[in-house]
Image (cartoon, rainbow, N blue to C red):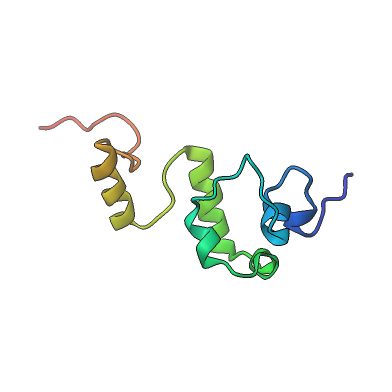
Length: 96
């Protein structure tokens, strides 16, 4: 079984090393809002993920739905002019 690095900056394909060491990378956008908010990337990347938040992110990534609360997703729907929330499953019920 392969051992994985314990730190994000140790992954050769990750952008974490560029952020931690402050190295410019032509493949990375310099207009990312997090760049201004995070002062110490090594500390930021060492914060453990919350299990609930991580599960929500993974579920949304797997299904293709946006991750966020209902008001956030509704705002996205308005901007995208399309439905982004999952609909009820199955066939519509027949009206009597």
